[in-house]
Length: 114
Length: 110
Image (tube, rainbow over all chains, first blue to last red; front, top):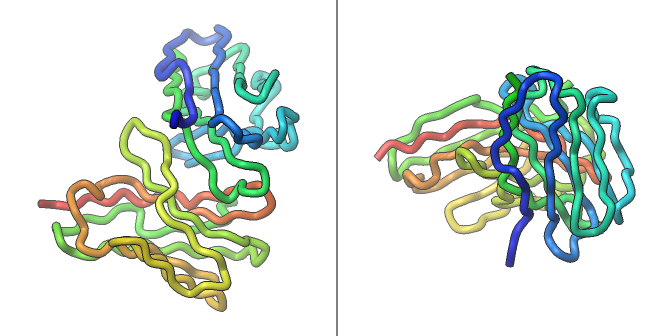
């Protein structure tokens, strides 16, 4: 079975540019999470969707960050405009609703903003 | 502030040895305690997990020990192998959130 799919795997962009990260959750999973991982702050939850509806976006660092989930099989995380401090690895994870204790992570997108 | 405190930050163990990673928490509302294993360039993968009404859980060479009164739990890797070299994260679940520890990088020397 395919796990969580993320694209691109690596993204290098210049400060001020728009960046869009993509995620396809595991089929049948109706909870989706976006995380950011940095050496300084570890794994941070950015936003949580349940049944395509954003439930908790309190972890989104600034208005420059936005996330959407137009359907059960696709989500995007957009940064506009990007800044060097956004450089991190961004993970998408999914789970069954009611089993959010067991989240399955994608391979991540390594973002570098120069 | 970090809700789950993890130690040590890193450890080196000889092949065949035991690796022990410790975590502590304060929030008594946590209801599930998973451990994740992460290899370089990969996402965290669920390794083993325990509920707070159980004191120990063993899966192969991996064992979680849980002390509810002390609000501490630990991961033991028995007969450590070079393939176990990875970063390990403890986590605690409440509602829909996982709070992660800072991670422990384990290096197993052959």
